[in-house]
Image (tube, rainbow, N blue to C red; front, side, top):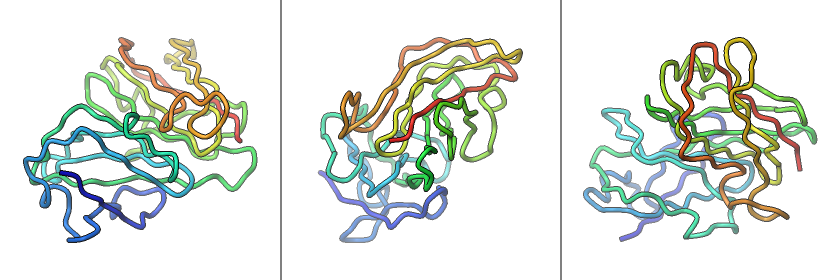
Length: 220
């Protein structure tokens, strides 16, 4: 089965951005318990958006990802590992707008480690300036949030039309641990994906105290 969920979402928050079925008004866990899903197509009007399917009781993130701009969706790109909906699951989104400045970019990143997954952000990133990313919920650096874990994947989405030039991880002395180069996404030349400007999986990077992850971008 497949259902359509929607929400006139508020920028820059998770709370209150729970999507409900367009017909019944029910949450995903109530409407589809036990249903195995393999695709989540999350669309937004402009800017960028992260989504998650979360257990409302345990608060565990069961599936997560980024949305695509309305009109640029791709069923294949939006596939996920099969997941059976739990009755306590809710489907929530975290949107950000396009930065009002012509030389600034809003950026989100799902970062997965042996400790779990967290959504990081950097808002108003100046073109060409490496900018520290911090967790959306607690405003923590990579080292504070993921200390003593092993980084396994980084997935980055910047606002429409922007380029993620690079992502770098720095240790507590300012030394560069890793550099990853990104690009653009959907609807522009050289696009890598409809949902991410950078996607790196299969990593094995130990995260120490004081580590930082910085993003460098170029606005459309």
